[in-house]
Amino acid sequence: MSETPVVLPKWGLTMLDATLVEWLKQEGEHGEVDDAICLVETDKVDAEVTAPVAGVLGPQLVHKDDVVTVGATLTTIREDGA
Image 1: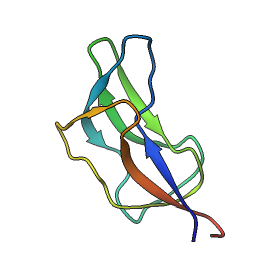
Image 2: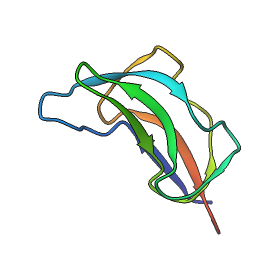
Image 3: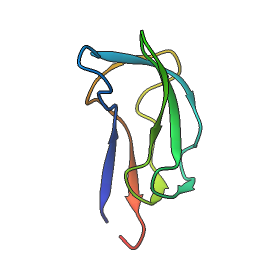
Image 4: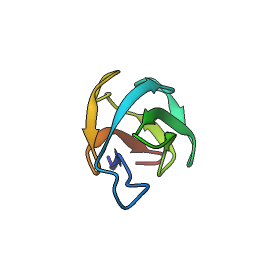
């Protein structure tokens, strides 16, 4: 079974972290590539973190209002056909 981590991307040169505002998909939900998974807020922008692969969302590893660093794993996706 293949799982792909969903990590907080770095959107700017100075971005170090972001605050999780809201989960848009829940554990066990199926999603497609580029579906919005959660909404995060940085000091400069609000943005959606999207799915890198299609599959079923795993457990949420961070919670609303948590501050997470760039590269931190937010959740995993069990890939289709895996």
